[in-house]
Amino acid sequence: MTHDDLVGQTALVTGGGGGFGQAIGLRLAAAGASIAVVDRDKDAAQAASDAIRSAGGSAEVFATDLTDADAVRDTVQSVVARFGSLDIAVNNAGIGGEMTPLADYPLDAWHQVIDVNLNSVFYCLRAELEAMLAAGDGGSIINTASIMSTVAMPTISAYVASKHAVLGLTRAAAVEYGPHGIRVNAVGPSFSRVGFTAEKIADDDQWAAMAAQHPLGRTASPADIADTVAYLASPASAFTTGQLLLVDGGYTAL
Ligand SMILES: NC(=O)c1ccc[n+]([C@@H]2O[C@H](COP(=O)([O-])OP(=O)(O)OC[C@H]3O[C@@H](n4cnc5c(N)ncnc54)[C@H](O)[C@@H]3O)[C@@H](O)[C@H]2O)c1
Image 1 (cartoon, protein in one colour):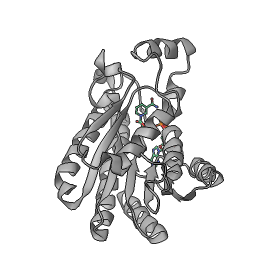
Image 2: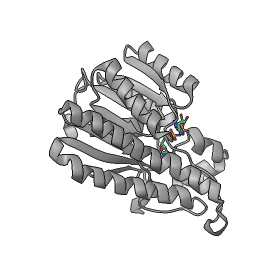
Image 3: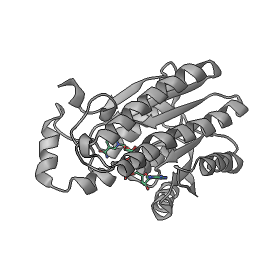
C-alpha cells in the first residue's frame, strides 16, 4: 500500500477520541484522508483532531452520542456537507460494560452495552450507507469488532453478544451493498492496554499473563489496529468484503 492512497477521501471515525480511534484517525490522515472525529467525549475528540492537524492532516470534531439515531444521521449529513463526501467510515466506538456472570447480569447494564456496541453501529451503518448510496461512488466501511466476535470470556456476556452481533451486521451489510461498490468489513483486535480495557484491568501481572496467551508474546497496540483499518479502507483490499480480520497475535489460533 502506498502512503497516499486515500488522498482526497473523507473518513469518519467513531470513538475517534479513544485509544484505537486516535491511532486510526492519525493513520488514515497519514494516508491522505480528511478525518471526521466523532465521539461523545468532545475534549478527547478535540485532542485527536489537534494531533492529526499537528501531523499535517485535516480533521474536524463532531461531538455526538451515537446511541441517538437522529443525532447520528445529522452528524453523517454534517460530515458530507463539511467535506463534500463520505468515502470511508470506521464504526469503532464501544464500551466494555459490567463484568458479572451472566445469570446475575443486570438488565440496565445489558441494555447499555447493546445500545452502544450494537445499536449505534446499526444507526451509523444506516446513515453512512444512505450517504454513500446517494453519492454513487461506493465506499469502505470498517466496524471494530473483537476477538470476542468469535470466542468468549467469563463475565462479559453482553460484550461478547454485542461483538458477535457486529460481525453478523457486517456480513448482512456486505451482501446487501456489495452490488453498489460498498465494502463492509470488521477488524477484530485482541486485548490492548488502552481506554476502557486499561481502566478495567490495571494490574501489570495480569497484562503479562494475557501477553503470554498470544503466540506472538504481546498484546495489541493501537498501531496494529490502525494499520489493519487502513488496509481495509484502501484499494489494497478491493476484493475483500464481509470479512472479520482478526488482529490478535494468534490468540484465537491457540
Ligand atoms: N482495547 C481493547 O482491548 C479492545 C479489544 C478489542 C476490541 N476493542 C474495541 O475497540 C473499540 C475502541 O475501543 P478502545 O479500546 O479504543 O476504547 P476507548 O475507551 O479508548 O475508546 C472508546 C471511545 O468511544 C467513545 N464512546 C463510547 N460510547 C460512545 C457513544 N455512545 N457515543 C459516542 N462515542 C462513544 C468514548 O468516548 C471513547 O472515546 C471498541 O469498539 C472496543 O470494543 C477494544
